[in-house]
Image (cartoon, rainbow, N blue to C red; front, side):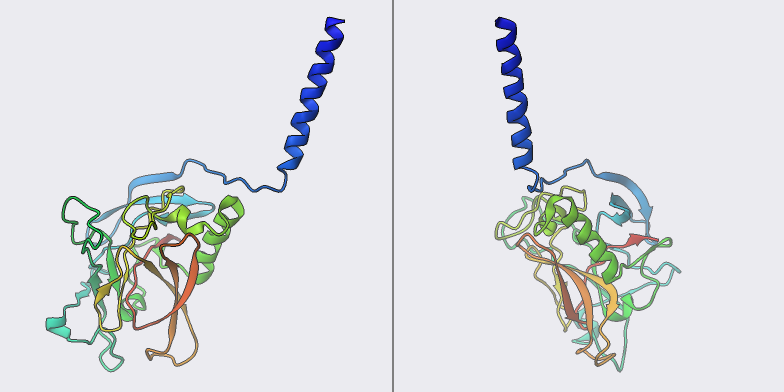
Length: 253
């Protein structure tokens, strides 16, 4: 009798487990795997070393580009208002320029002053279009490559939370910190406005692609698709004016 009772108990537990499993078939549970982060595996022309991370089939820089030298050894000119005035984007004088992202600690988050290159550099349209910005063996991503990244996150449990999974766990205002599940460590670098002023650090990150709009070529009305991360959780693709300066995350060839 005891054996029969034991058998019936085990059958009941098995059926309950099966039902619970079936009830959860439609629930997409985030798949959190240890990110494949490699330290100092990439070096730019200035000698800066970068972490890299593999997400899906893509290998990304895990930090924003901060080089001030092209991959052929040519220096990139630093933008200052004293030298260039408002000529950050001037089709008649297409200077290839970079500007450091603002490190003003608007939310008093950090105990110490941030290094000037903490968020990396912001590059203008002409520097991006030079074709020499990315380290050898790497390139600036296209919109399609950014979309592949977003789709990988969406398909692995982070739908509508793709930005949250990529953002750093600190440094974002308005409760915008992420969970950095994949080691991408996206800091809020902001962008450079059409006059060259670095702005919106700690609030947003605008990462440039090579994908340009076809209307009004060469003017401030032409657009460049940027991967846009804000204080909310989802990723978006912003058709920003090419007059804006953006951060760069390179992807391996």
